[in-house]
Length: 96
Image 1 (tube, rainbow, N blue to C red):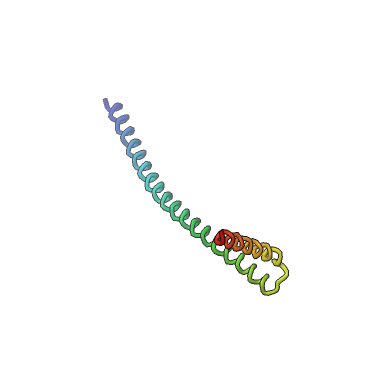
Image 2 (spheres, rainbow, N blue to C red):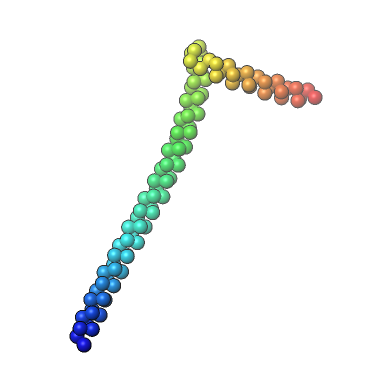
């Protein structure tokens, strides 16, 4: 009879240990999920920053080419020509 009691006690101890480990793992999982959410928000913020800086860079390139920089003159001329065509198209539609 004591052998069965020993087995039950050992089993109960193992179950308690497993339950404790499960609780610890759940807490760790919750912390990691929270950290993941924070990192994802940081990534979104950095992507927005990159897009903003990219727009600023493109604007600066265009301004430099208008000031006489030879590097981006072709791109700026193409953009200006496109804008002029769009304006001409709008004027033509208004005239109709």
